[in-house]
Amino acid sequence: MPFETVLMLRRALAPGGVLAVLGLYPVRTVTDFVWALPALSLLRADRLLGRRRAAPAVQIPLVWPPPLSYDRTRAESARLLPGSTLRRLLLWRYLLVYRA
Image (cartoon, rainbow, N blue to C red; front, side, top):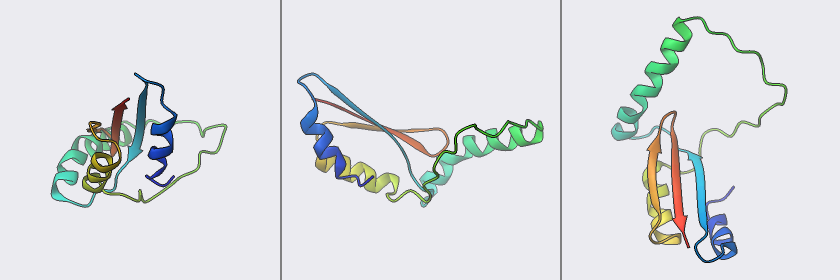
């Protein structure tokens, strides 16, 4: 969904409410690549161990590549959600938290 959607969600928050967004970012910078190394190592180890998983019963839509870089997401969240926090997670994900 477009990142500007957070404005609508922000307005819908009750006082003291929390908006949490789990999103994906593409690997575009050296910093992104360094943060991706643990995830790549885990995925490689999983593949080497030969783990096979059953296909999910429900088809999950795939959205790739993610539209905003991590740095751009940080800038947009600072602009649209002042006081929010953004942190990187494993597997090219980030967690954005805004408290009303």
